[in-house]
Image (cartoon, rainbow over the protein chains, first blue to last red):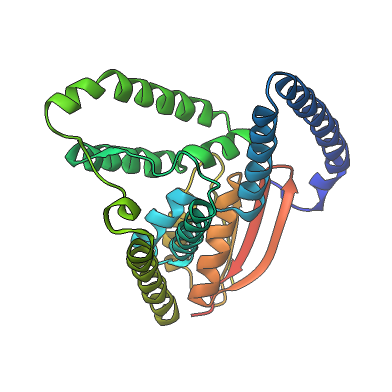
Amino acid sequence: MSLSGGNRGNLAGRKDGQAGCFFLALAVAVFLAVVLAHFRLEWAAVWIFGLLVGFVLHRSQVCFAASFRDCFLFHDYAMVQALVTLLLTVSLGFAVLDLTGLLPDFPYYWRSGPATVLGGFLFGLGMVLAGACACTSLVRLGEGFLLYLLVGAGLAGGTLLGAYTYPLWLRLGGLSSLKPLPVAMGWPAALALQVGGLAGAWWLLRLARRRG
Amino acid sequence: MVRYTLDAIGEICPVPLLLVHRKMAELLPGDELLVTTDFSRAVRNILDWAAREGHDILIVDEVEPGLWSVTLRKIR
């Protein structure tokens, strides 16, 4: 396969084609935003925010599957360190939003237990085999990888199966209601524990990266 | 100096980097490897890995929309 400058003759034409696709997609996105705003302004805001997050995920090449996989396979800790930075930011952000009263529904109660561990293991296995998690699958699909239509179908199928068998997991005792940390111990202690733990993990990863 | 090629088109992460890893182990210092991939994240992975391992990154190019080539030179 020739990868020399000879291929570049067709490049300009292809890029022009991409520009057309971009403006078409932009027009559809704006149209959908207007339609959603007509029903509820919040929906349009979520749609636009989602598009912007997708753009950042694509351009930054952030990959959550890589963050878990590459530290084991290639001793590459850069992405997992980025993930810990993200969790640190989100933890602080949630505290600020809740303490300023911007999260009326907080705290969120989720059921958790051995079934969560089993589900997490299955999800992780699928994520590594597919080469992307839920959000990066959408990024890859946006890049034109049709394989990720299959991955998306798997994700939807798995989610439906999880919802369908949810009562079974409850009966088996695999899920129990847990108090969120801020409820169990208050925001200051919860923040100290979570931010302290994550900061410790971040520092260890930094050390691991320096040692190569 | 010998120039090798590696076709990783159609392979998803982490396979392209695993193939590069394996192929570079066979090369002698000074040899070059031209890798082609259509998985954008694999380009980032290969570049990060090459930089960590101390290999020279000679050329990184999007030769066609959605198709990248990376040329590495083995140093040690």
